[in-house]
Length: 428
Ligand code: GDP
Ligand code: IMO
Ligand code: MG
Image (tube, rainbow, N blue to C red; front, side):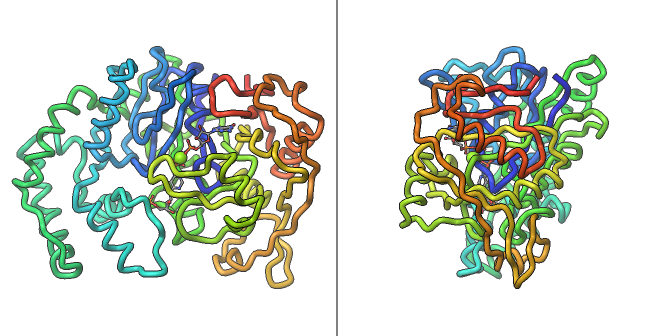
């Protein structure tokens, strides 16, 4: 299998973890390239279910080397808890590699995430409050701390003093929050350092060596296209490039090494946090309630109820363009089995003008009125189907309709959370 980027095409939670776990065994390495523990990727293998936040979903296979790339932001406490959880469930983490250049989430990033959100009042982003935005902010401001700094106490203390000079002013003078001392943070972080040391690696060099040896890499995106800092519904986005292109700077490999881009697309839409959502269904509507309950649409990271809505072809086309999708995995098709008819948004009307993709002016997207087509449902349990031909005719027609609307072949269809509940129809 050629090296591939796996990317979310909507607002996250499309089932990236499930599909990543499904295809990971065909690769030598699985690499996370951006985001942090704002991600929640669920994997279900038999009766075991894992919610991973930082460790790549390839961890389940002994033949795969899971890598946390330089573009990821690491909360060391969360990473160590996740390692412990996996180990206690019999999943070895010995092969895991952690980039020297990944930035560290510090306790003050978490404080500031909460403080910034409170200050925004009704305009809040609805972040996961894991310190992601403030950590990337410090990275860009060049006062961040990296995994490599943590590996050397003297360097760590020196870099931390510089960061605290600025951050303590903000905490104290702007928000009236408690400040930190270097010693106070060192007490916990230096203990993390010793536990993390065996995993630390120059991952950029390692991945390039792997490619030279003819091995292949799966890049596991977190968040999704519309949460991308550049291409998403700004300002209601996360603070990294989650689109496929982010895999290159976020891991340190050259562009020519990637030939496949697999977009993960849910058969309907969800969103957590604030921001526009043209096809949203109110929770109180029967359709909204059905998608929430049948789809189990509650966040893996924060437990928040996800907003739900019909599939949006404008977003699908936009994701195809921004990521250069070559394949699609359509997930959660089984959830739509409940409906007599299924709506699909094929265009937007904005101030009398028709759009077939996401308008780049945010205010136009805010005012977008979906134009729907209504497709017949199939009202049949499809969770046991294992080939495309086994799907009821109307389910097949729905898949083909989405494929045509988005303009990219659908080569995987997921009909349940388990690894086995999948139809391969062109992924080879
Ligand atoms: P991710 O963030 O993109 O990895 O997605 P999440 O794991 O946050 O959310 C997807 C949820 O849907 C998880 O609970 C998965 O177990 C579940 N899931 C994934 N694919 C399917 C599917 O095809 N059908 C159903 N019913 N559930 C699925
Ligand atoms: P996975 O990888 C869904 C959303 C938050 C918020 C915005 C910014 O599981 O798909 P942040 O904490 O990143 O600063 O929050 O982004 N968000 C996600 N929504 N799935 C995710 O990850 C998300 N990660 C962040 O809800 O709206
Ligand atoms: Mg998720």
